[in-house]
Image: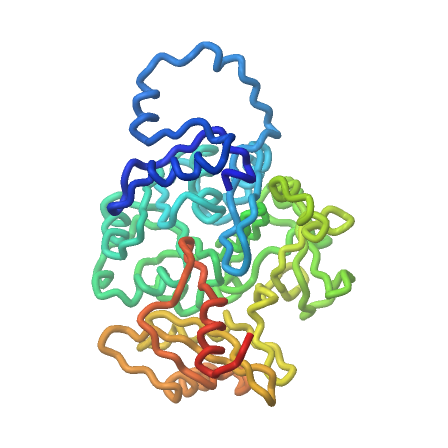
Length: 431
């Protein structure tokens, strides 16, 4: 990152969990000639107490200058820099209001301030509209619940695994979460079970948000999609002909769904890659012109790499990341659908589904499951439960791997690549 950005300075913590970060920074400085200054947070606090240099007033900041440079989380590839300007963020903050947050809210961010999840749904809206931000990192479930209660949190963004953990954690029973008005779930769609449970126990509404560091954002909040059964997996189809949304900025955003040849799909039920265009999207990856030709189409739409299905004309249903689709004998299985159903199983704490190689069908579904403490889980338990939920037979998992934890990156996304490699190794199949 230092080499790509030609960074002039680095700010870091003096020590964390026994690791000396300044020493690491010095090592980077020896390799990157542009890196001249290294500061710790103690240095920054000291500077804040000093009289500012008058020459700083001569610096010109333009609304189209880069405000943040977030990096893709890299579950499948090397991270890429996503530069967003002040103007980009002004638009993005307005779109975030569709989640149900309100100016002056007390907002909690449960993840690190490194990407769209926390920066885009909590930090920048706080800068734009005011309120209070409560930080939480590294993740501690009991501390998270304590903060929600003591700080009287009104809005937060969580990932599905944390939402389900709260519902199944013994410490959450009887906890007063009455201050919370809305929770937005990101990184993957929530399960209907979790939405119903939060509403029943605490009268808390859960919204559904899909977004990327590149600036794309579809927000399914209570105002936009009041029906919970629809909100669980439907997102606004911004730019759909004749459709209006409560979110004011939505009128400036356009989406389209295309087939592998780039032909736009418009009929209900059609599945294709989502392309997205709007004033909240990066103009291109930072100093990577080699990537931009493939990242945008001829009309300036960003290729998201995610598959969506057109529903009822006005909605988009997240189908899957293209590489996470399990193709069993020609039938497409959404790993996310399998995971969301199984998260409702009373003995399942966490779950991930991946395709495993099969000579006859191409792929079959393997699920990695973390059982709740003191519970036992069998494949027959899981398939029986899914059948009771009305899931089609071809979508049922055909192998179970019991694990202590699902591997995730620092922002909560499941590292499917590791799981696919693990099951290939166990089957003795080469990549």
